[in-house]
Image 1 (cartoon, rainbow, N blue to C red):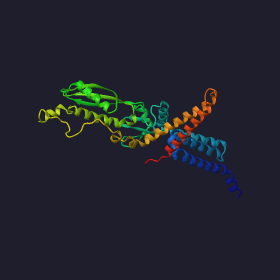
Image 2 (image 1 turned 90 degrees about the vertical axis):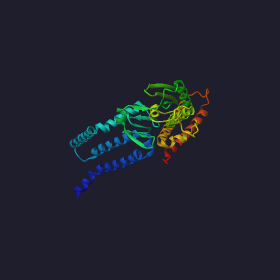
Image 3 (image 1 turned 180 degrees about the vertical axis):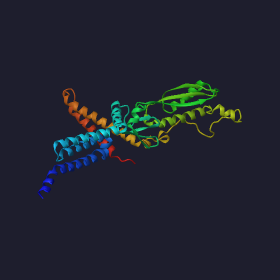
Image 4 (image 1 turned 135 degrees about the vertical axis):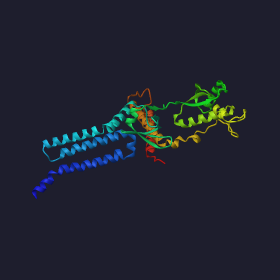
Length: 347
């Protein structure tokens, strides 16, 4: 009986450590991984914190074992071998994705809410985690890309300050190129694009290939502008009596010489409704939410810096108290908007 009681007493520290480790890991999992706010705001820190706590729990359990120092040292060596083996076996994916994720964060080539294109994938960034990056495609689907894929493939990032939209079109030699250039510029302006220009890319056997380009300052409506630009090209060219049809097609069909392949009965207008053409707010809802959260967090951090800077300001030159109250009011509004954005459920 004494032996069993002594044995239970000797196992007390181990049992207490195991219980504490389970409670800590369970609480950390709820706060770092399962908590939607924390996981979305700090995905990298959440995952790194969970890994560090798991390793610390294993070390604490080994330290609490009722064994001599030599056996404990062997257990630490075994733990090191296990971790080394796991790293070695998973180095091509696990560690590689972690290192790629850290590299992408250090480079800061893109942020949540940016349009990116990598390989055959195009969409808006919704999440940047330790192992993967999630984008939302133009079909509203979520695509998970391993960070190693983004680190080893060229990534095209649409700049938030604006981008150029282009459209290729081939027309026959019977249409003067100066007329075509003028009409394509008119279509770009009708599509609300800035600084349009036209390039002649190729003089083919039967047609000339033109490239119409315009600057789009609002990348949040990128897909709408692309579709609207093409619609304006159709309306402007058809309205000016220019056929958009291959001469080869004309030569292969028996048609009257004065026949024009222009839709009949249609009204050619350049008035566009962006929301009707392409509802980005619906298709990129998660990516837009991630972008709004990031902007609100940056705004809050900037306001805190301004409030802290007022401590060193000269009260005789500026009204420190009035500015402080104004900044604190803006900070409260920013926190309220951030909290509402984080609590907003996806419809």
